[in-house]
Image (cartoon, rainbow over all chains, first blue to last red; front, side, top):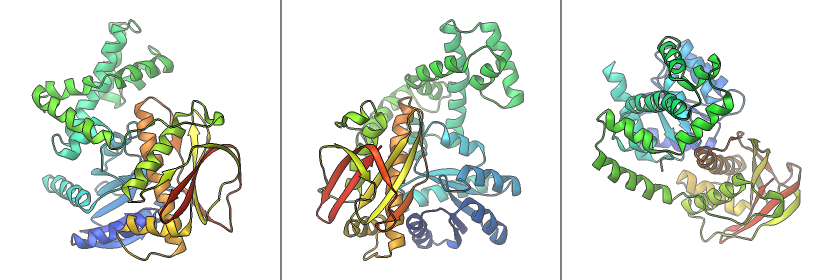
Length: 124
Length: 278
């Protein structure tokens, strides 16, 4: 898969890049704000966007809405340290996120989440 | 990663899909809330039927629709949601009725979930007088201890708390998060550079990380993870709090001052750190 990472954290961006490379995926870009992520999405049209929920300027939920309104087929995995806060996971899934990955994540967590997303996409 | 809610745990474990969980939650949040409102004598069954009949067409949940139509006040909705949250069995009932799990499986799954939860429980901590009653402070201190242990910063000994006023940036690198909601304040972690190097290396599974930007970012991310887990636990207990995105500063660009805060000193083999909650 060609993957775009949108996360204000350099640490998590680098860790996710390394994990995705190990799993055989290609990272096409790393944006550190939601707005920059939307711009990079238009440029690269990736197969998957790994989108952080809490970011300055444009947060993940707003970026998710923007991406899905721009491209209803956009395939998004939400990343979040606050996934357990009242209704966030449900809201993200309702907005069209394919999965929500809780931080901090392991290589196995990422592999399982991508496999789940691939299965969902295949069904369509 | 430890799931914070039973539903999330079931999805992570592969017992139910996210879609099946959403359907069960819809049932739990919609119909159960409606039934509870009638059982408590807060609304009439006829009014509930009218609101439920409109739900499928406008896509909102029962609680929101009931407040909009005036049959429930926002306070009554909050009370009913509190009652529902404190009754975890309603999600289990919805899952069993949908034949997604059996009662026997549920007993086993709840045991497994509770065992996982114990790893990241909030432990009681003493607070200085200026933070009396601040559940967020207890959660933040507890989660900081959890994450320090998770990243192998041990032994990491937290001092007894003391009332503190002064600079937030007590060590080389500092990150802070603003607290908003039922209370306002801030949560900050300030680390010796040597300790931040160990933290960043553990977070990235890489050795010898020394870039200041990366070290500050690792500290921000630690704040974010601590606040995220604290927010989840507090939300589950009915607290209304939110935490901002973290920001960082070095020793030469301190964040300023706190006036009435609690301060915990953290000692580790790699250096010292401070935890401040205002």
